[in-house]
Image (cartoon, rainbow, N blue to C red; front, top):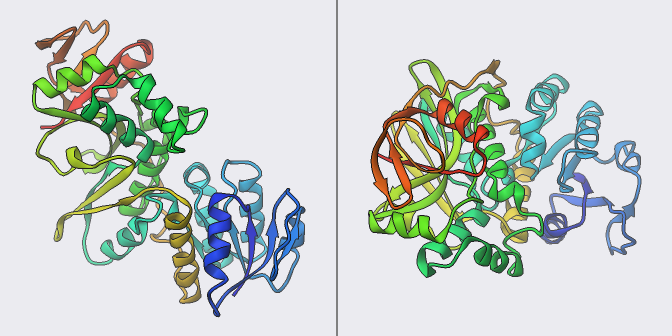
Length: 369
């Protein structure tokens, strides 16, 4: 296998270093805007140098972002080259373009590292759906949010103090919005649901709420009631079709999710035969993520393509009702008061997320039953 590697940052360099030790694949060209010297690969600054190289049969996209990643990815597929990427935003946003294009061109598309970093989550969904119907997917999919919530719970510190600590340690970006507002998790649960259920969720129908409004007082309220707050994603089959959403959720202190420490992930599926299966590990980092990129390259060598057949677009139905902890100007029915916050009567997921859009200063967390 001859590989064109796009991007030589944290993940790209890790991929290159792992491949250097192998004999069944070789990185021959690296797209990088900086001047770098490599002993066994040519550094290029123009993607066409990779695209037009007939010896390169596989492109690894490790740049991140949507553009020009999408243009490079689609061009590679159209040129008959396999594509492996760790970019969850890319595959989620352009799912309806990339997955059918790969099938039409008869080439392989893999993105295991896009969800869970070093956890082989998507490849396990691929194996599981061969022998059973998957009923539900989700869990803790973002290490930055888990680090913040775990530290606030254990130390009683406030949100901004903990966020600054996460940034200092490299767990959070200088602009952390994609993580703390739940967008990273949103991409991951949509991609996971598409693969688990063989559908293509309409992204606008999947609501998301993040953790940026949480306070130390909220966390103390949760502790007083035997609860721990985690950012939880959910995708599942319903009588109406499929539901999917991302939101802070209060879990019992004794649950596996409550015990997930630091920047770790705990991702779960529920199958009609296997019941609950959970996967714990590092959700990011150079070598864990690069490991799964190379795993995908090995799968491509063995003839594996995408994880599930492409399914028609499907709108999420979030009419199920849950109780919520709400701190803000909630005017609906209330069953309890926890300090300055209230516990709502059961309310539809879609309805309370619509309310949150109109009240962005509020904080909410679903109560896991």
